[in-house]
Image (cartoon, rainbow, N blue to C red; front, top):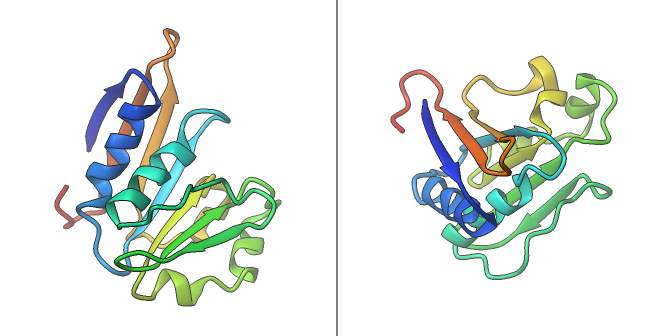
Length: 143
């Protein structure tokens, strides 16, 4: 597990860039954290690492946004899902198993439907407003 502390949105974005530079086609990044923790900012950093220059916004109402860069970025937001079964119902298998990168905000709502190979990122808001970012790579995957 890697753990970093960020002081502002730009540093959180830089952590996303750092992770984004290490991602390979088919990787899944599962983001967890409270509302306002910086999940979308972190995703914007991943997008930047993939050569995506358009602004990344949370797809809370559309559920999935797709961006084109060096490889596709599938940005999912599960905040509005009621059950893990609804995640499977979205029909995202092609994205999760494809040649792009899948980033899933509120990933805990996918439950057991989330593939075990996902890189899990937890962003916590500390009492002083700093962000603690923990990155858990699946077994056998280098950080």
